[in-house]
Length: 400
Image 1 (cartoon, helix red, strand yellow):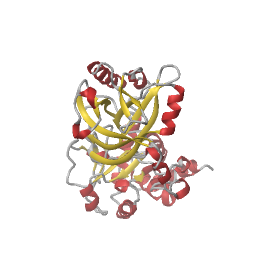
Image 2 (cartoon, rainbow, N blue to C red; image 1 turned 180 degrees about the vertical axis):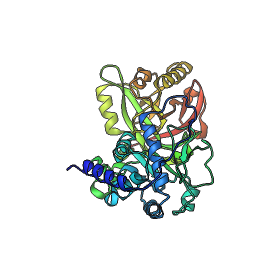
Image 3 (cartoon, one colour; image 1 turned 120 degrees about the vertical axis):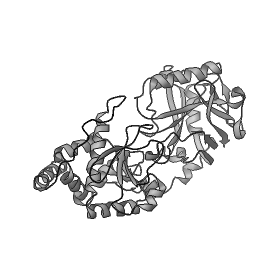
Image 4 (cartoon, rainbow, N blue to C red; image 1 turned 90 degrees about the vertical axis):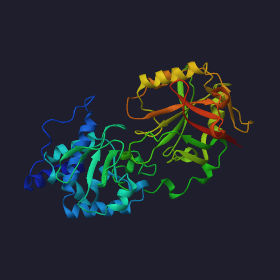
């Protein structure tokens, strides 16, 4: 019998024996601008199940202990792996407290895709150690009012801008790689698994290339329910057939020399934008071709821009028009800053039309400070959107 089928059989038996009252949602749910996706609906049902399951003291104490022992940033846990840990104890609790069948619970766990569970507000993490004072919340995308459930399963909407006094346990789309670079372990890594080889990437961090040494953004582009922001810089270049291709990505989960984690509006240090090996390979294939640097706040798959293509295309075209398409850069290892302004020979509009509409935020596309006419904080590149609106800046240096 397969592992999945054995869970279904066990949970159906447990569900038949369980004595519980179905939770009833309000007769008239709040009006939505757009219908919820299958994943969003599944997340809400799971959040409600979890909220009612945590009314059990033993279940609540076990989860509080797991959260406090987590090695992941902000005490996060991978939800789908967590519910199957310890012989499926939490999975059984979710099934016995839910209003639908065990089979539907497993379907929701799959439809919701990867989820992470944690208390995103720092004061809530310090305050909650397994008490009955809690809410479980989720949301569709940044800017939405989080949907929350109390221990009885009652549904409510929270303020999207300010967290409540009651500790909130967030069940939201996964942004953390719990596997340490080993995706085959995804079903078991509810906490951080050891990285491949168990060592550090220190030797990679010393590699030559175009680096950022300072970075600033005017906003964190992140809901309080999603915790700290996941900023990324994407470097685009010219492809074989004239299309736009991504050459590199710098971000929290980029890995190796490109790993970089900015959690506040200001950052300083050293992180790779385009390694010398990647630059040399690009130059050999497309001699003299420029690159274009775009900043995102990632809410979905790491280093994949999942954005509203029409909106992003409009913003990028406005920046190109404002600066006469001098919105790219030519990487030159002999320059101290490593990159100088250059005319764009490709349109990012073509690239963003090929991505999936989702919750990632475009922060802006980089314009060299002499072209932009400003140099905030001594930066040599300014992040622009919607024409000439500044949303950030960064400083580069070429490391040989």
